[in-house]
Amino acid sequence: MKKKEILLFGATGQIGRNLIRRLTKNNYKITAVTRNIHRAGYILKTQANPGYLELKELRNFDINKIDELMGSCSICVNLIGILYEKRNQEFNIIHKDFPNMLSQLAKKNNIQKFIHLSSLGIEQAINSKYAMSKLQGEKKIKENFKKSIIIKPSVVYSVDDNFTTNFMMLLNRLPIMPLYYNGKTKFTPIHVSDLVNIIFTIIDGKYENLVLECIGPEILTFKQIIKSILNSINKKRILIPLPYPLAKISAKILQLLPRPLLTEDQLELLKYDNIKTGKYKTNLDLGIQSNKKFRIEIDKYSYNWTIGGQYSKKNNIEITK
Ligand SMILES: NC(=O)c1ccc[n+]([C@@H]2O[C@H](COP(=O)([O-])OP(=O)(O)OC[C@H]3O[C@@H](n4cnc5c(N)ncnc54)[C@H](OP(=O)(O)O)[C@@H]3O)[C@@H](O)[C@H]2O)c1
Picture: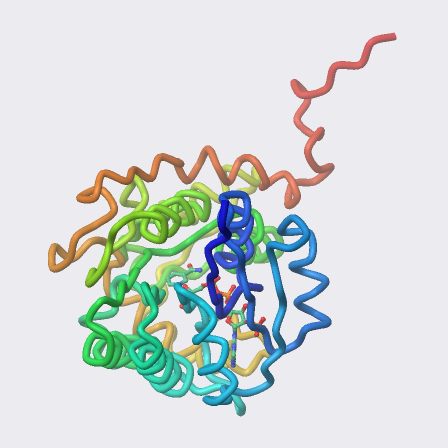
């Protein structure tokens, strides 16, 4: 069978690594673009059978090189995104200018599909630079390439995420956990394998000109998520609602860390629920279920953060003499 060619940006991330495995198993050939082929080679080399994954190193967004790569693919998927700004990475460049360029090249090369990952819960967050840059990116894409597909997931989790695992680490160490906005912000967490299934269905099916919100099977508040994680790692912690001015000061300090735990921009975003808006279709409207339940899934890897590890629970130990 002829292999179908996909150009993938952001392949080394949580979603990219999982998507590569699913696509290559199904006869898609991937060209994965990365900024550092040595680091990416190490992360990606076991993700596909020989011949199904090619790595390309691009240290900057060189339009001529990307144009050339786009010319030899039929589908382009953009998973590049950042959670905070640093000296060399700005929201506007990553979330607006780059997708703008990609969608123009998608049109120029007349490719079959351009799929871009944006985010859920950003429409109202006018004080968040992250949210506004993602929205402007969506707008540019729609203007440039009408057939584009924009996927907007709620928070994505798995054993190698930057979300549950960070909280497991923090809750393991800190005696108290601040609750921003009283912990009332709502999320619809989606497991990475459910999201990958949705993206795969979109790639493999006859979809175009679509904005799709991707949600998990449950609506959980921030407080419920923290409590679930605490139960899962078998820890008791004091949860303290943090008034906004204090939350702002804590974000100002935490954003100074090399990998910020919370930034002022993220604090603004946290104000708004991360659930379906009713403005766009969801995966459920397309008949694509997301079945994985948060607590059941995190229990599968939370033992990494419990004292004694996987076999520490007494009833898990069966020693025969
Ligand atoms: N994870 C979530 O909960 C979630 C929720 C909603 C939306 N999304 C969106 O889904 C997409 C993928 O998410 P993810 O969790 O897989 O992301 P991730 O794990 O943070 O990976 C993002 C990828 O972007 C590339 N990248 C990061 N900074 C870059 C820069 N300055 N220049 C060029 N490339 C850069 C990296 O590739 P290299 O280092 O290989 O170059 C990295 O593999 C993103 O657009 C994200 O905003 C994610």
